[in-house]
Length: 203
Image (cartoon, rainbow, N blue to C red; front, side):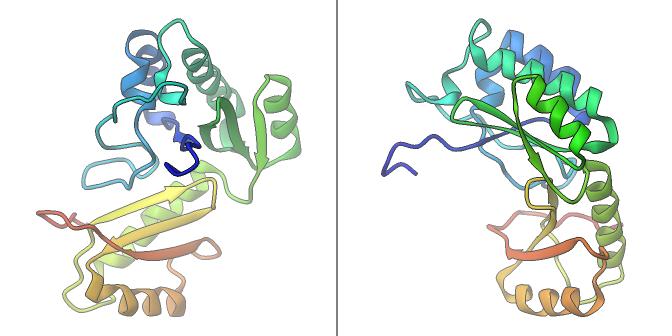
């Protein structure tokens, strides 16, 4: 919070952007780590960060450079993401510490041995991606009349899929989600969207 000057947690790139993330860590880490977690918009993978880097503040995680600890954390995350495979769920930096969410005790030990902070969760990144795809297919059948989906995203930290829609469709869609459970045991959260020019395609 700005009030107590606690730096926000920084979401890390997913498997689709690992190579780019590692390169960015060496070339322009500030541009990657200055972004707070945001929703995936049209054409954006559900588990990747989006948005424009904010101006870094002294003493925050966003002030990392190619020779600093932030670059090393990004590279460590990229390595762990690859090594953990199907047991990986998410990764983020909070107060200078790399946190990695995993689904099993062996992966938890591996993260700890590598010098990062493990977080045990119920669902892997692969399972959440599958759930996101199921939700997108379900939304294509228009469970709510005139549905306008602005984004669909996943969070390995919370084990959820989030769908953002206009304010007047939130209640109806959440009711439909609760009644039909389109992602099975994975929770789907419907939130109000800040808005966008063109709703994303659910096909």
